[in-house]
Length: 251
Ligand SMILES: C[S@@+](CC[C@H](N)C(=O)[O-])C[C@H]1O[C@@H](n2cnc3c(N)ncnc32)[C@H](O)[C@@H]1O
Image 1 (cartoon, rainbow, N blue to C red):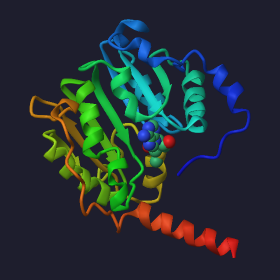
Image 2 (cartoon, helix red, strand yellow):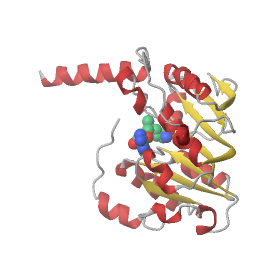
Image 3 (cartoon, rainbow, N blue to C red):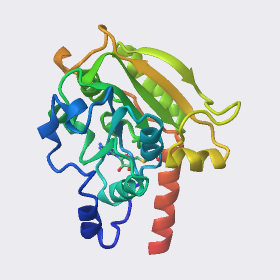
Image 4 (cartoon, protein in one colour):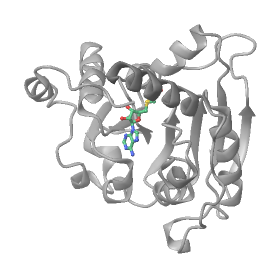
């Protein structure tokens, strides 16, 4: 769901200049030593309001964490949170996941976090899912050999569909679970995750390793996605409900 634009967005963005990168492509190929001397570069896709970003950066000060978010209203909150905690090892990019290859050189990233991406439940929108093959190949192209992608979602149909995509694209899957917190909270929670957990929802998680069999952008045309509807997904039910409510309000 798109956030409403925050009041005073522009001045607030300006105040975050220390962590917001206006020209991220300038750092391509030299991320690790542009802001210090980091052991690795991790990238978070769609960081939202940045709860996970701040906690992950704090828990691994030897790593540079670069968070990407296309919604400026969410991004500004994530940046303000990071600044309020005085974190030195996090930077933010206002932009679309599509531009990863312009910003990071091949093999420059050690880990990618993909937390609670939008499900895009309709089959015709499947290519927009951030676990669709066109995106997986972008990730593989910037990840180092042996690097990994960590994916979490509450949406089980999306998760199961994604498992098939990762396998078909040659990623090595491990730590696959449909109920991450079955025996108590595990790892760093995101903002969405905290909300879902408090509602008693189960969280799916997997880790996908990039190896020599993993397909990249160099592998040419991506497979066409057919019959990819997630009709029974929560996101779909929710959007149907919301649309019905809006209709009711209008009439
Ligand atoms: C459902 S929210 C999850 C936010 C956060 N990861 C969490 O778990 O709390 C998805 C976020 O991804 C962002 N997003 C979706 N598609 C994106 C894209 N193609 N590029 C960058 N950000 C994207 C949205 O703006 C939104 O903030």
